[in-house]
Image (tube, rainbow over the protein chains, first blue to last red):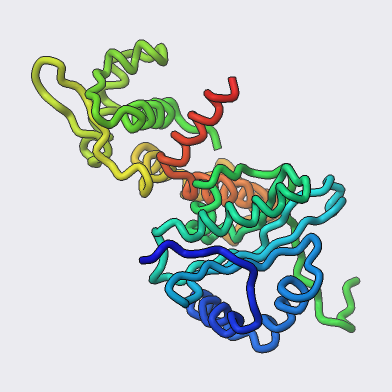
Length: 154
Length: 143
């Protein structure tokens, strides 16, 4: 495969980005990608990044993230909240190139720490970030199932 | 999770051999480096060889050579050769009970301990031998 070029997303890429996501997650997300493009891919991006890897005119993967200040009490750091590579294009270093590109963007903004959050039952993506040198962060994600509205919680 | 001694010795041996895949390491060489009984380590290496993680090379200058795929072999793969850490051993108390049974106290304690086990397991399944070798190299450069 031709070495992919990593660049900012364009509106015309969205259909391919959504198709990659659908192929991986099997969950159609109508409207979601247009919203993400509005927030991360268009206009003045400032601290936001939405990058794609393109090879031979085809989108092979994408990464999305942003710099966040004082979230969870943490000083300014970069967050990667989505990275995907078309299953047929994996093991060619595309994920690594996308991650390196977004990290370079974070560096230019003066960021020296990058975080992400992953499903612990997804060893594939966990292994990818581990292989890039990422270690456990000093945070513990917590969640709770909310009772439906109007339920008596006594 | 606190790995048993055999498990730790196995991890040391796998990492030592994978860091120099072209070399044959003797049990004595690894044992000396980590202050382990060579007899004890020989048994560990035998288990690793049986699983195809290392291969035993006979003759003068023989020893053990890494035979796995460092990018695919995870820490959990090695650990599972020596202990079953996925088994529900925690929080079940002296009277081992099936999951979901027991008193409210036992269930609550078991739930929290299971959280810890799940995190440990996810971590160990996500770190390959190649990834750990990269970590060793990074730490070496920093010191």
